[in-house]
Image (tube, rainbow, N blue to C red):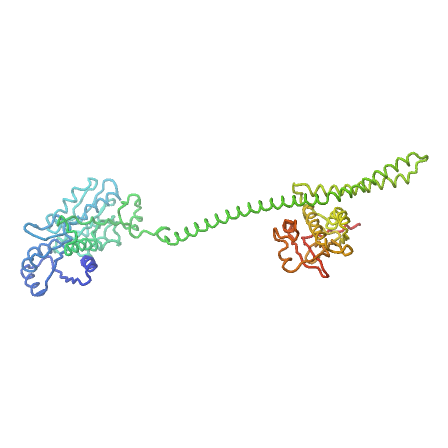
Length: 571
């Protein structure tokens, strides 16, 4: 009852915070004339806007006393079934909600959870009891699967004995309110709990006080739910907001509840539990127990997946860009090599004339010597050695040219640093002579090798040396000198190749920008040579620097990871 009053009050004060609710409890059996006199004195001078009653006896009293107590103000009722509804003939402004007896959905629940023919003992009111006059009619018209035993007309002792002796496989329904056959008093909640403890079979009940104490389940009317419905109806009537077209309407159906712990103990198939039932005491699953954590985890996973997808896409794009950049660098480097070879072609052609002429001259000498008798073998051998030397010189020049003009990348191999400088010098000396530049080669890394593409490193040295010669166009002839040297840092395990000139030199700003693409100091330059050279060196894991040379000129050097060739030990 208290839940009903609180729910009605909450609905009313939610619309009008100044609303005043006065509550009075009247027993079902009361002298109505004395009650009317007492209430007249108690509420003398109080003007009521509406009367709310709970239960059929209280509604009957309100209808009889309204003329003497309240006049024609609205009466709103709840907790009344159709069977014990008093007559409303001649009554005005009476509104309410008729509730359904919970015995029918309780028996239906028992049939669903325990299918098949079953014996079921039902504790109910005496036939014709004014509180629940249609109770047994509702029970008898239920499923034919249940064989009903009426527990009526038994005093407390016999009732306890019968419940304790119920046969296995049967069921028990404890309903209320029920009168004790001996005392005619309503069986108390405490007694109901004791009867529940005596039962050897599954028990169903709609009594809220028994739920959670061992019953399987049942259909119950929540006083709070009934009060909420009546409170909303009261607000509509008082505020004249959407008044009901029918003064008396059905209340919300009773709530079917199941105790999960009992159902699991009795090995009841969870699929038999109605979908509309409220299952209490069920251990929460992962979703119910950790919903926030699951949502956060899923959100984090989605965020991480999106981030990983973005990073993978970026990585793929970066690799594609790196491949494109490497390919473009290779094409530019090849074009630069072709340009360099083109620039050296006249000088190299002139240089090749020397070994070719020497080969021809020595071949003619051999022919003359072969005509002598006896043939001077020592002189013939000397001439043939000179032919071999000239052929080797020409072969090295042509091999270098072939590497420079070949477009396909060369296999990475161990390259001796000093041999690399010597091969590059074969192509640079003729050009230095043509430009009247003194070319000095200072190999200083014997036995030092680097893992590299030989043609690319030759291109870097060639580019730095030709730039050095270009920088000395305005330098007096006697001072023109290009020096190419190598060295090895054992602590850092790096080989260094240095190119020095005596040109116009570099200041600090030029040294910082000299490797930028399209930066050039030549009138006809594109500004790509040094940028390509730096890219080739970095591609081998090295670095390229530029600085001013002490005494005038510029100093370009690059470092590469080096491998020291181990000397062979003879036993």
